[in-house]
Image (cartoon, rainbow, N blue to C red; front, side, top):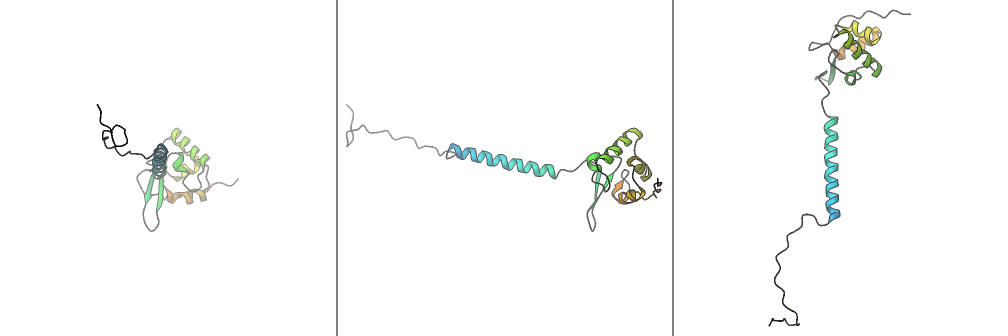
Length: 145
């Protein structure tokens, strides 16, 4: 014979305490996962934007921050950072360097990039030819046609 409770129902055995759920509901879990993915993507974008460009750029610190690009090590993406150098000239410089070897000075750069003497003068403070200082050699004027 079984014992019955006050209302005639069988008494229940005490249940084990339930564990708290990590996520309140399934939509909450999905929202948290999406938020974490967005945060991770944002961190990745910031890291890529702040990534150091290859070995062809030297940052010069002083009253103002400037950079100098090593013309013998820089790729097209670094060369376009220079004044007067667009994608077409950057490509010409890289192709010339591949065919003829490292640049020896500004005169070779002027010929390879088809630049005027004035353009090369503007470019000179922003370039190096290896680990040395910026070149200071005079640039021959471009003959007028």
